[in-house]
Length: 205
Length: 76
Image 1 (cartoon, chains in turn green, cyan):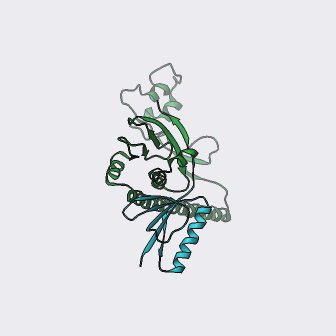
Image 2 (cartoon, rainbow over the protein chains, first blue to last red):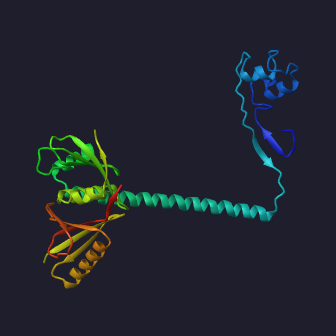
Image 3 (cartoon, each protein chain N blue to C red):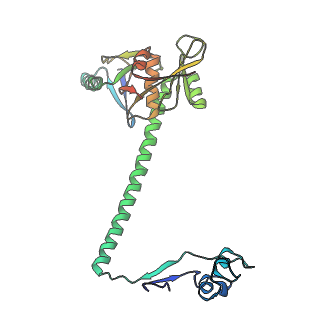
């Protein structure tokens, strides 16, 4: 029993649960006359820190077995109702999250399919392997590379293939692959200036 | 009979609108949808079924094979 209010019954290694009954925390604490942190070998401090020959594992997690509270049947019913409601809401929330994840996966798959339908074989391969799409505009090197990221994913290259800038231009409310498809269409159809006009830019040095 | 396809990007990936170019009703419905989206800031790109990109368009043409509509872009 825990001293104090006397309302809670506590079980644990305070009184038992040790291989050495005389060294139980509670017994030692109560009966050891050398009850200081720096004195004799049998004091609570030394036992607790494991100075005895046989290490003792104390379960110091007391738990409430019962609580004598003055609750009416009405209180108990209200508590049960709240518990049931909380559980139902929790389950509904989990179902909504699972449904949302499923819808998102379907949307991502559709957007990927649309994007891939726009790319040539080489671009598809690079997208699959390197998560980027090179876009050639007549030169030896790509003029732009789209990386599979939401922000700053339009990389501009110079005529020698050196990455010189990256641009951030986004489409809101669509899967990432749709954003890439939109960026790709702007550039591939020759309207990249329109794309860059609204973009934020970062020099790459 | 030739069919056209419009793919409109949205949160679900995209929605498809298909029209038969010989059907005035279907063409009008597709045109209405196209115009409404262009007014909302969408950009339309004509693409052939082989994947060739014809370019950006601003007017609905029922003879086109495939049109992709992308929502408005903005600086990130």
